Image (cartoon, rainbow, N blue to C red):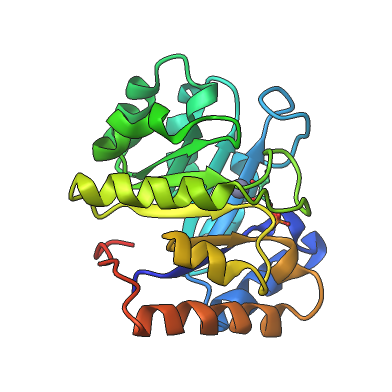
Length: 232
Ligand code: DX5
Ligand code: ZN
């Protein structure tokens, strides 16, 4: 199944984090989306390696780590050691993006590359063959609970077209402002990995997760045109 829900724990209830992750796992979320913010690349500060280390072993879910960190190459090994399975860096945060991609690969993790809303998708075109997942931000990174930027849909379509034209089985993850009532548009545009924070953790976590999982499953059944890679 190539359609994956990645609940962002940024919006979770931290005093019950383990339990909340378990609920998302039981209701169909295969990833945990782990947002690392450094107070430099983005204004806010979230959490880092020690928290990842403590949760990575507590669930069978894939640890999908999104580094909103300036010069992220400094932390690639540390996040591998803490339990990251997929490590995503921002194009805008890297001095040498190819070096960062190479180092993530060398450490044995899946490689993610992210672009902010103001970065054109063409800027990553030549890198698509070297990554496993493109993360398209549909809000300006830094905070949960923002409104989906509608122009992101065109960007997703363009990215999916580029990947197809190159014959790439690329995961396209979309992050920010995704709710049950707009996720279908995001999927129809060509995304297959859906990040949702507020829409999963505000309210009934089990119900929110299983409703998303149902939408993603029916997309997979319809055969949304994407062949899943076997590792993720
Ligand atoms: C924003 C983060 C997101 C965020 C999404 O910078 O990268 O993962 O938690 O939260 P929602 O789904 O509430 O927009
Ligand atoms: Zn994120």
